[in-house]
Length: 126
Image (cartoon, rainbow, N blue to C red; front, side, top):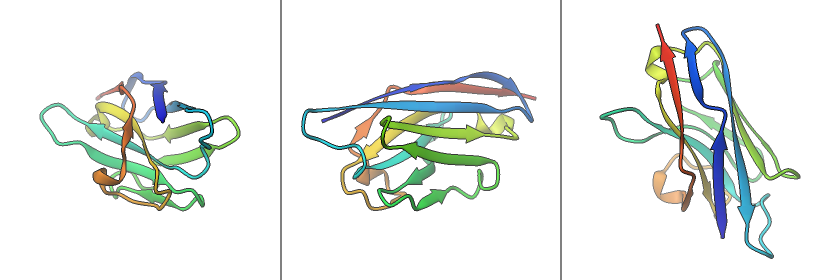
């Protein structure tokens, strides 16, 4: 039903910024607005963890580690999800995944996300 494609990853020095984008393609008859959308990341040797999420009613969730540094936003008309990342730290180095959940309800549970992109690498050097 939903295909997701991330872009915008890259290498940056600590303190720098990056903006990730996620383009969604939906099957005929499905609207983007009702979906829960989120950004997750997985660092080498670690479990995947949520970074930020935005529900269908634009409520947001942020992991404590990124609060006040990252901003999640969505553009329903363009079927796009964004993650503005400022003041990047080496610990932010990971593969970042865009994910979607059909419930629309804001959630930080991985099981609530049924659709995943291929991921984009973010590397922050000290």
